[in-house]
Length: 283
Image 1 (cartoon, rainbow, N blue to C red):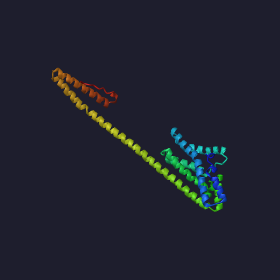
Image 2 (cartoon, rainbow, N blue to C red):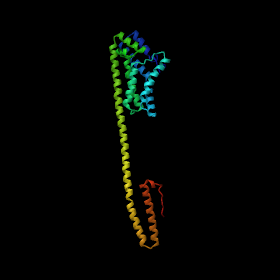
Image 3 (cartoon, helix red, strand yellow):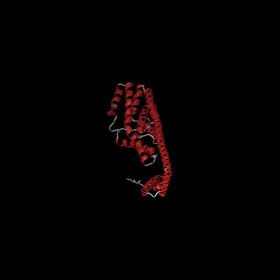
Image 4 (cartoon, rainbow, N blue to C red):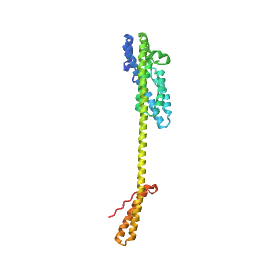
């Protein structure tokens, strides 16, 4: 990203030259804003990539600690790799340390409840807010804004007498975006948790209803045994009392039907007797 998107490509170099030749407060704030945007866009791919890679590895390998360890290892490594081939010193200072810490805090707050796209949106705001600390002049001794462009912008602000104004606006913008990201992360985490609990409750309610319906069906099927036994007894009595062959044939068919119904009821009641139902047709 630093090779594809540099200070010349976004017009930052032109603004700095304009500041040196015709200094003004408006140009200074525009330069500071463009610098923060450039730093955010260049840092977003590997910060966000490390964050989401840690999420995926932690989920797939069932190792939640990887969600924190992977970004902590990868982000400084990416800075080192970039500085090997990039002539511009890609400065790993205070904002980078704060961002790594923010990832750890975000992972602890979310605890796997935030979807990747939501987590990416929250972290992007957090990244943009923290990058504003690079332009806060009194934070320079604490490794904030140690890169060559940031240093030049702050030096110009001091020479113009705008160091207090630049630091104030930078802190305000930092507070707005970081505060918004924190509130959004907490709100979305609670919302996701409530949604998950609601889904679990609906599943439990469905299982309870299904279980209750199953029990009621079992009681109903069990109660069918009593009238079947009564019909079988009366049918046997008819067979004993009559000598008519045609009536005997009818009672035999009734007995067979009772037996088939009884077998189906038993298959429902007892697991060991469950089998495919057999259809018997009488003409």
